[in-house]
Image 1 (spheres, helix red, strand yellow):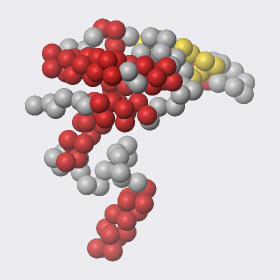
Image 2 (cartoon, rainbow, N blue to C red; image 1 turned 60 degrees about the horizontal axis):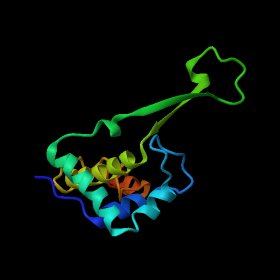
Image 3 (cartoon, rainbow, N blue to C red; image 1 turned 90 degrees about the horizontal axis):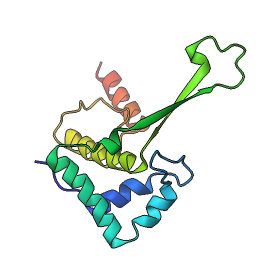
Length: 143
């Protein structure tokens, strides 16, 4: 059973985004979205949308849309290779927020239920390079 998202989880997730990031497909900036959630009604509506999508096991088609822009990399002599270009994908701002909330929840449950090996460090919260160094030192000392 999936726990419903809270106001705190939404605020924690949105606070991690930089206000100067590019617009999403929905034309919302993070600065604007952060000001929207100051309203109790708006923050509760966003939480309701997220929880309803999860409970119905249905992701709205609006959140599945993206646009890719291909930009040539600077200082390249020729542009005859795919490595000479940088693809940038634009998603809906609200969808990125919901994805972050869901991802953090999944990561928490996977770690707390030991679904992730203890030697996995990359991309996980509260597992730093220092933690990896300590684990490696421990393994080397055992041998």
